[in-house]
Image (cartoon, rainbow, N blue to C red):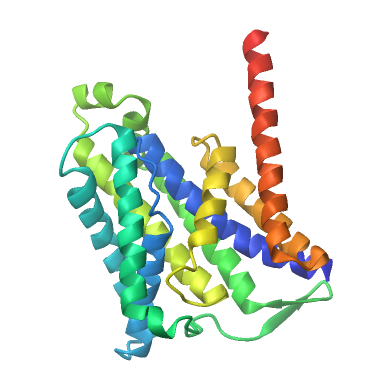
Amino acid sequence: MLLATIVGGISLGFLYGLVGLTLILLVRTTGVLNFAAADVGMLCAFVAFAGLTQWGLPAGAALALAALFSLLLGMLVYSGIILVRAADPLMLSLRTLGLLIIVRALAFKIWGANAPYAFPHIIPDGSLALFGLNLSYTQLGVIVFALLVALAVGWLTEGTRIGLMLRAVSADREAAADLGVAIIRVDLVAWCMATLVSGVVGILVAHLNVLAPDMMAPILLAGFAAAQLGDMQSMLIALIAGVALGIIQSVSSVYLNQPEWSQILSFALLTAGLLLRSQLRRRVVLT
């Protein structure tokens, strides 16, 4: 029972970590904290849902359509909200808060009347017996897909030319521009990458639970927590912190039998972790 609960927490925690990863990617590259990071993924999940249920597309085509939509959405958000008028990072972050409100209101207007929806199973039903546990293919599939996405983002940011430019812009935007790096193009790539990852998360959340306009609200909060534990800099720590939060929430919700207490417990531990990290950093500075 405990191990099965932990596996469920791991699958959910990877989704928390991926949202934290997108937040860190944009903060490091552009300085913008994207409040709509999770809800654009919800919009992409609804596009995939429409392709599967209304337009009769095969699973591969529906997912490709959702991926294309996420990339176009990333371009639109960057061009229409971030690039349209220069501002400091705080004001740009507040624009994404407005985007969050618009996206969620639009989703409720279009799909809210009959929500929640059962997302068509792309991952086959069934379970795998492993070490005496019956692990569902859905949970295992979510873990595998999340790991693949995390590894792909890590490779793109660390092992490619575009990753080198992303790191250069993250380190010093003005110096990178002086060296000939196309800042706008790099920012656009970062936004498209973040939106694509958010789209994957949205589809996986819908597959794991249900599809609804407000399904990403708890994912966003946990993603913020994971990103904060990663100091808004370390994607790896954010991913690990997301998994830890997922395990804590799953185990506490089962054994406390009160889901609201699991949220309180996980974020209490988050607060304690942030305070401890602050104290450790202060000691390092003093020494």
